[in-house]
Image (tube, rainbow, N blue to C red; front, side, top):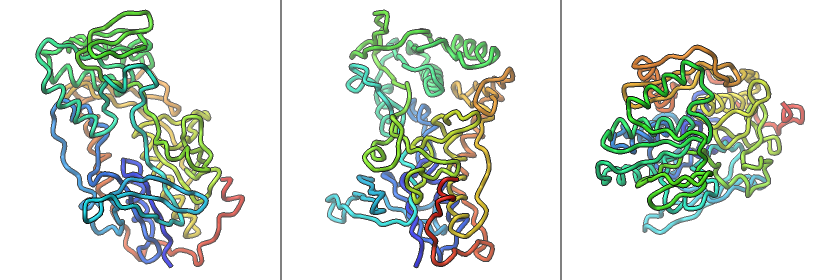
Length: 402
């Protein structure tokens, strides 16, 4: 019998994991099913571009995974039972009515990722826009297209997403009054060179920066900061962080207070050895025993690690032992400017930084490379792929603790 592998979620991490598993294992031995709510791949790192009216290349999963042996199920995951090893999905039936089905697995790869986090700030859910996914970016796109010249846009959040969103909107719509609020200083985690460049670009683009200004309420036409300041905002864009998908918290998996699945160095659940978690859905430790941050830069190598570990355990191969580390932070500042901040293995900025047009080109290469890696899981010839051990053994206690 084929070993049943189900991958939940087809963002960067889930799609990469499915493609890599197809490359590592033989079709006669495994059945790989990829479950995703949308039929197309979403380049999440480009949602700020989509929001300002740029068109992104469509990437249908059926074309991307054609010939790989990966079976696509366009459905919403509504439940996971890790004790019975089943997944419940809901999809549109032939008559248009929703149909619920239970899928059984032998190995599960949980990659449902994250969405926006309003952090419970009053008015955010009612009045703010988000760009954590395509639906939110399209809603913001429509709103910005209708926004008259001279109106104000406030981007809340001074992290990478906020910086990119503020710069992209200001460049695409120089007729708008764009502002950014940051809980701390602008780019205060960057090197001195990085901070200088960031301030210079924001200055040229006309972005007003409110530093040390935590937003405590969002209204229909303004935001309010902790000191009571009201900042006009015809449109508020909320980019203060991500909240993980809630399904894992409803299972018996060991999760953190944030709902992330706790995994070992091979991305295997510490409580359920037949479950792997990758990307934003997982809490994995990096250099210095620091948790890896939610990002594409983290998720993709986590997917490689998980896929290689699954293949090794199924075929009796050697477990991967590649430490996960950081090299740089890539920030687009519109289409003509960028900032590449080089960092230590544990993600602390060093003095070196690449700036300007070359940095923008570098970031574009990174984005294109990430999408290419999802769409091109180059398959090894079948004769070079290891054969599953039969029967597939239960995880040994020592292996589970690896």
